Image (cartoon, rainbow, N blue to C red; front, side):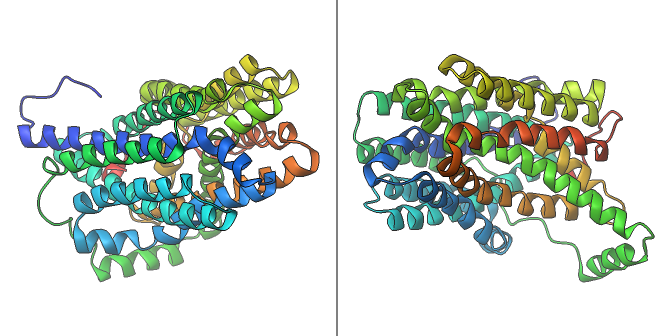
Length: 408
C-alpha cells in the first residue's frame, strides 16, 4: 500500500483501510494453509485424480451457490460483521476438510468452506469499496495485493507444517485460531453504520430499458462473454497452482512435500509483484497490451516447463504464469464496468459471479485429463488459457486506464 496519505484523510478512515487490508491478508492465508496438505489428503483417502478434482471442485461450487446470497446477508448484518464472521467460519470449514475421513466428507466440508469464503470475499470487497469512496481515489488493488501476500504466508506455513509432519488437525486448528483472532481484532477498526443504499427501482428499470434500446445488444453480449473468458482464464491459472502444483511436483516430478509447496508460492508471489506494478504498466501501455503480454508469459513460461519438465523449471513456470495473469481479473472487471448500456457495477457483478465457473470446472477437467493421459498434459490448460487471453484481449481498452467508476 502507498504509505503517503493526504493529511485530509481522517485517522478513522486510515484505520479502516488498514483493517480491510488485514481481512484480505487473512483470507488469502487461511485457504493457502490447506493447499500444501492436499497431496497427503489425496494419498490418505486413496483418491484417483478424477475423485480428487471433483472433491476440490466442491469449494468453488459452494462459492458459486452462496455468491448470490451474499448481498442480502451483507445488507442484513453489515459487510464488516459478515467479513469477520465469514473468516472464522471459513477457517473452521477448512479445518474439518483437513480432518475429513472420506471423499464425501472432504467434498461436503470444502463445499461449506467455499460457501463461507465467497460470502467473505464479497463482504470484504464491499467494505473496501466503502473505504475507497471515503478516500476519493482507487485503493482496491492494494487490498488484492495483500491477499497475495497472505496466500504466500499461508502457503509457506502449510509447506513447513507438511515438511515437519505436523498433524493436519493441529496445524489447521492453529491456523484457524490465529487468523480468526486477527480478523476479530480488525473488526473494531472497520467503518461503523449500515451499508450504502441500493439504486432505486426506477434506476434499475431505466438500466433494462437502456439495454433493450441499444442497437449493439449482440455486441454487448459478445463483449461480456469475452471479458468473462478473460477473467476465467486468470482464475483457471490460479486454480492450477492451488489444486495441482503440489500434486504435480511431488507426485509426477518427485519433489519433497516442502519443496512441492513452492509451486503455488511462486505463482502467488509473482502474482503479487504483478499486482504491485500492474497499475503503472496499464497506465503506460494500456490494458490490452498488458493482458496480451501476460497471456504470452503464462503460455510460454508454463508451456516451456511442461515441455522440459523438472522441479526448478516447473516452479519458474508457475511464477511466469502468476505474473502473467496478475492483472487479468481487474482488467476484465473494469472493462465490464465500462460497457455501454449498463449502470456501473452491473457488468462487474456479472463477471465476478460467472468467473467462479472457472474455479468450479477446472479441478475436475484437469483431473479427468490427468487420469486419461497424465497430469503433465492436464496442466496444458495453463498455456492454453494464456493463448485464449492473447486472442480475446482486443475487447480490452488500448488506452490509459482511469480510476474505475464506482470504485470497482
